[in-house]
Amino acid sequence: MSSVASLPTERSTTRNWRPRVSHARPGVDHVAAEQAATDLLVALGLDLENENLAETPRRMAQALIEMTSGPDFDLTTFPNDEAYDELVLVQDIPLQSLCEHHILPFVGVAHVGYLPGERILGLSKFARMVELHARRPQTQERLTQRIADHLQDALAPQGVGVVIQAEHTCMTLRGARAPGARTTTSALFGRLRDDPRSRSEFLALTRSTP
Image (cartoon, rainbow, N blue to C red; front, side, top):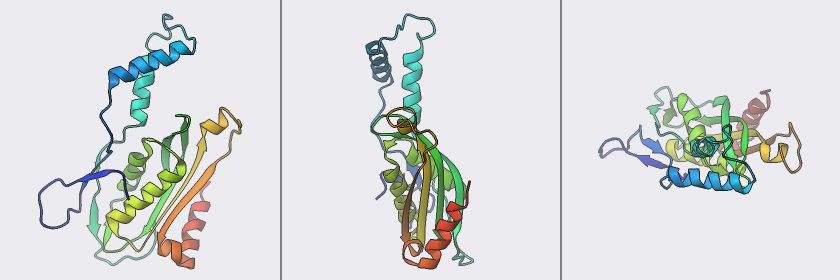
């Protein structure tokens, strides 16, 4: 299930087709975050009396807060009046997240698609959903599954597919130091998982991107 909160924008006895989606997380203590950044940098031997580093703890804390805070948005859907049942795929959605093991970024693209049921999703919401789920420390596998789960829960479509391709700086800048290595993960539901033709079409289209 999705780990985000969908908050109704108005009281209604029928389902709200434009729920407010927010990043469910505890409150952020900006002061404590800046102090922790100061302590870490001093422990690493950096001279924070140096003019060039004096503001670094504040900037460092703010950067991490920004990278772990996804913006709220309205998950707007519309009735599928034309009974469209072919693949809808948004490719190459920019993605930035954090490896939860090293708190270093992984950067890449997401390809998100679905086979519509009774509702269709506003196209900009694919990018907003990716951004919302990406803004937290996690593994790429979990991120892929979260986006797919959210789409499945929100739309009840005939099928959902998510593919993420990303480069992990915890692998390229340290440790193995393998620049250029990319990791690919996928999550498929419904016909995109169970129907061979639908599955092949989706995976072929996501592989065709540079």
